Length: 425
Image (tube, rainbow, N blue to C red):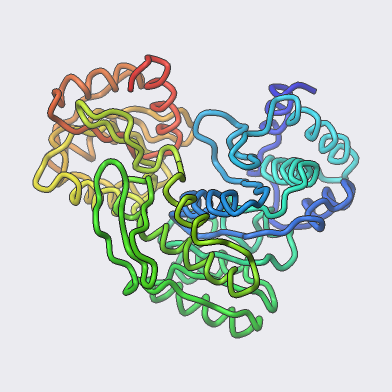
């Protein structure tokens, strides 16, 4: 099986018609020799910030000398982004080989596993074969019934920022969503939480008490941001001083602080993570599509804000970096998101918005999106495709303007690919 054949096979098994649960992934992994039992995990769940926190943790641990597996979703441009070892994406031949084994095991099961279950099994096989010392594992959707939750008690569970998303599946209330994500809290486990969301925090504290898990919450009073610009942030996180993270969003210093809190907890458990590794790892971290700076004349930013919580964070970053400015946006949103709340946040900053259809069957019709923007007094310009949208937005903004593309991770991937394909810098 080639890498392309592996990807086609995986994508051919959707989850929509399957009942949620862990029975299929448990059975699949049993048939594969339970590779997850030979691995150590840091398990990360939450509404927003999961990928950035995972990237920070993986970067620091790699600098500390660990062989680090990183399993995240979704991908932006290439499927192989989901499975990495010390920053190296799984190769096509490697993906084909592990997926061939997964396909053989899955084909013998009474109920075939879903797409995400197949990916999870392939990742665990790859990490075992590459002899990873630790795997930073991001949940796909929720926590309790997410395929990643097949693992036993991880070395650490991390809960990132909470908000309303996937309510139709996990909701309908924030407490329901928090309860689903709290499923990664295992009996006797060690947990670090972003905090700052009262309803969710109550759920996490209660579940930790019930399961005898220790809980550490991020203390933002320790955080002082010294500098924030398009190069990233410089900050203190008492008693740490003069730290830097090369991620530009205003929220990224908080994500780095959460990762640092997690590293401190691991240090108390006996993990050897030298200060030099912390500083170098944070300063070197990269996470594409999360307030990523693609160009500077004009400024062209790319952000994966795909729900109201993410949009609020993106807007706050834009207001901090470009105070008083009205900006040009390239926007595409999925129809199952709270578009009204997202646009209420975006509209006050918008000089004009170029609307697109993300490459997803769940995409909102650009005409409907444009109508919602027009009702909020925003100038709307439809675009037939991403390349046209990029060129039109750049021309409208001018050399001294600011363009921000956001609204969907699908759109992020398309914009990023188109940008670099055209040789921009």
